[in-house]
Image 1 (cartoon, rainbow, N blue to C red):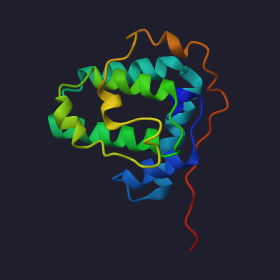
Image 2: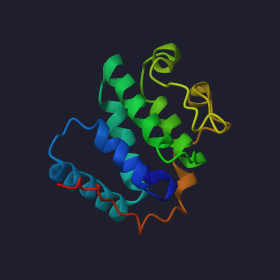
Image 3: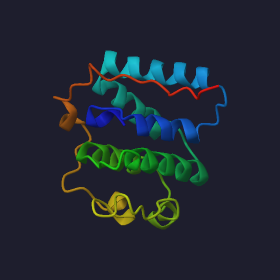
Length: 152
């Protein structure tokens, strides 16, 4: 989402549709809090997230849910960016589920099949850098978030 320097409305809509929170005002406030943290701490927010993920001790079902949400968010705006895939691969390296288990939650998406296949998410990157240096020049100072409110 923010690792490409932009948060598309489609990505926010996808997260909102997958959220267990039913109160859209609370969800909007939570997303805005995350965006402010991203804007304030930049790449350190991503590092902290990855550190917390590594220590989270998720079970396979939770890992599959995380992967499913991440892939759906990446594909939401139909524009697959390298930084999004690189960040996904960092997530992948911190979870224990097998490729087969994860492929079961990464469907073929016709809207992006010319850009990426489910297997591409799980293939090794050309160069795995764990230091997140690929985001050193990423400008996320103008990232904003909001959730469209449904008309009454």
